[in-house]
Image (tube, rainbow, N blue to C red; front, top):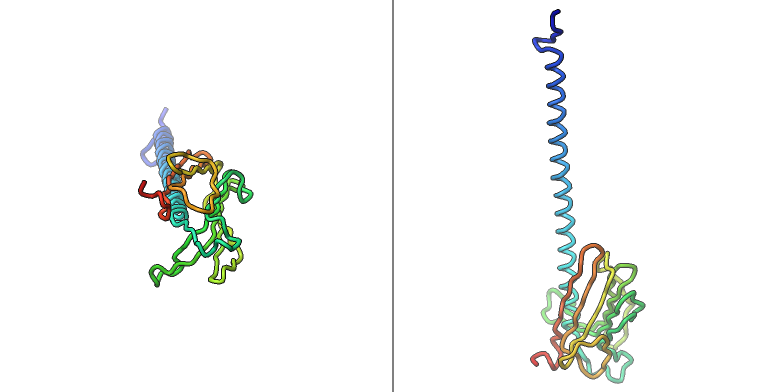
Length: 203
């Protein structure tokens, strides 16, 4: 009995070649999918790291420049730093501060007073800001989401060699503030920020 052939190849050889080609194609496809998923994962991690770096930079800038203005002593804006649980209707700790911020990229040391708040709301760390004009009037507040996926926001204050869980003194500033952020499925980060205007900064 003669073998069935097609263009010099037997049917069995054609079937085997087709199977091998299909398997090679599937292997290449799977490799491409793995590379694509890895690339997406790397891009996601890179974005998360960038968001965290920007957040830490912003927190450091805001908190390190907390200041006390003596001309406000008879004004209603007396709380220069207020830290406690559930402050500002936070789901965790809340932070309220009074600081001086540079409002011009063209003019060096062009500062304006501002009140800021940080709170945890619906797994989002929010930043609440209000500018204070020269006549001490406050503008409308702005609320911005700094980062999402936050499940824990904790604060501690370092003063005279001790760590405290609350602070609302109107007379002086502590030496440092410790911030702890817990992220959903991503671990915990902790940062200690030195207050530049604290009288205890060099102690």
